[in-house]
Amino acid sequence: MLRFKNPANLVAAAHAAWQVWSRVSQQDVDRVCEAMAEAGYQASERLGRLAAEETGYGVAAHKKLKNEFGSRAVWESIVMYGP
Image (cartoon, rainbow, N blue to C red; front, side, top):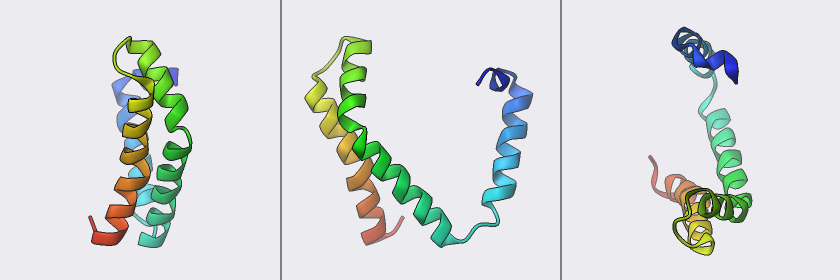
């Protein structure tokens, strides 16, 4: 990750990602987004606990619920109703 501290590296990495992702199908984008949502959902408890520990604010169980909603529920609403 240290290589991204330089803004020029960030711009170059963003451009390289754009070059790849500008050519993929909508099905590929959907597949990746679905996998990201599922990964977020599966990690929601751990991430909620870590967020509460790191910040000292909130309740880990509430943060878990927020993470669950922000991952799977949001993805399902996009699939159902469109972006």
